[in-house]
Image 1 (cartoon, rainbow, N blue to C red):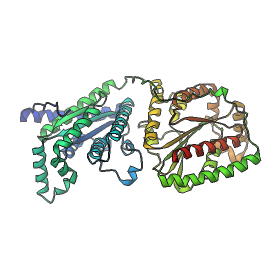
Image 2 (image 1 turned 45 degrees about the vertical axis):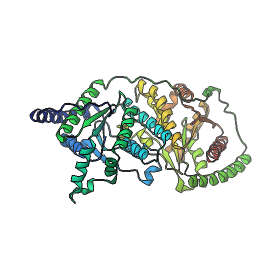
Image 3 (image 1 turned 60 degrees about the horizontal axis):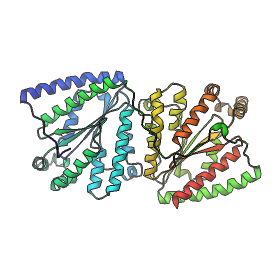
Length: 489
C-alpha cells in the first residue's frame, strides 16, 4: 500500500481550518447517535514513531464527552500478558456498545516489531496475520466499527521531529529507542509496514493512510474519515452478516436420543478408580505447570445432569493455586454490551493453569437461541465464530476439552423433585429450571445441532452418560487424563 500510495492534495489554510471545524462539530453530534444506536467504535492509530499519533488522538476526543471514550497506549506486552493468547490484551479493551476505544498503537505495532526483531519467522508471522484477520472480522461482524489509521511520514521528516524532541528535556521522553531504530532502518521498516498493511487491508476494516507531514492536514484527514465511517456504520447497522462455510475439521457426533444412558459402575469400582485417577491427574497437573501448557475444560448439559459433582471430583485432584472454576450465568450489563465472547476472552487461563467453565460461550446457540436473546443470524453465525475462537486457543497451545453431560427426562424430573423437597438442596432449583424443562425437545434439537457443528478435531465434544453420576465422573477423569498425557508427550 505504501509503495503505491498517492499523497492526497492538501487544501489551502482557510479551507482546511473550515473543514476541521465542520468535522469536529459533526463528530460531536454523532456521539449521541452512537449512544442511541449502541454502536461501539474502535479507532486504531498506528504508524511511524514521531508521526503525531498522540496529537491526532487528542484532537479526536476533543469534542467527545469523556464518559464515552477510553484511550489506551499499548506498550510492549508484559511477561504476564505473554502468558495469554496474543490478542487477549486487545480483546479485553474493546468498548461497550455506544462508546469509543482509541488505541495508540496496537496489534500492528506489536507484530511488525516482533518480526523486525527476529522474534517471528515467516510462518509465525503468517499465523499472527491470520489471527488478526479473524479478530477484526469477528468485531465487525458483531456490530463494531473498526477504523484503522496508519500515519506516514518520510525519513527526513521523522529524523527532524526526533531531533527536535530530543533537544528538550521536557520532550525527550517521547522518543523511544524503537523510534530511533526505525529512522536508522527506515527502508527495512517501510517494507515490513507495507507488507502488513497489504496483508490486513480488507473491505470490512480497511486501512486509511494519513499524510502526517503537516499536523493540521493529518488532523483533518482523521476527523473527516472517522465521521464518514460512523455515518456509514449507522446506516448499515441493521444489515445481516453473511454466514461463512463451516469448513473446520469436524468429528461425527451421535444424536442425543441414540446415546446409551444405561451405563453404570459399582460403588467399589468407583472408589478404587476415583482414587487412582485423581492421583494420576494430580501428578499431571504439576507437569502442566512446569511445561506451561494451558488447559480449558468446558461443561455443558441439562439442568441437574451432575455438572457440579463432576467438576468437584476433577478439581479434587488439582492444586488450588493452578486452576479456577468459572460459573457462567446470564451476562451482566457491562458484558451484554460487548461482543458475546468478551467475557470468555477475559477469563482465559495463563500458561500452565487450568480454567474450568461451568457453562460457556455455547449458551449463544442454546438458551440465547431458544429464548430470543439474539437474532437468528447471530446464533447461526456463532457456530463458525466459536470454532474459530477455539482454533485460536488451540493454535496458542491450549488443551481444550468439552463435556456434554447427558441424562434423560425422567431422571431430571426425579432430581428436580428431590431438590425441591430437600431444604439443603433447594438453592439448586429455580423457576427457570422448570421453564427450561418444558422446552426439553427444543433444547435437544439445538444441542444436537451444536454437537454436530462444533465438535472439531482440535476441540471435540465428549458426551458423559450421567444417569449414573459415578460413571460420568470416572469417564470425565479418564478423558482429561488422556488429553493431558497426549499434550505433554
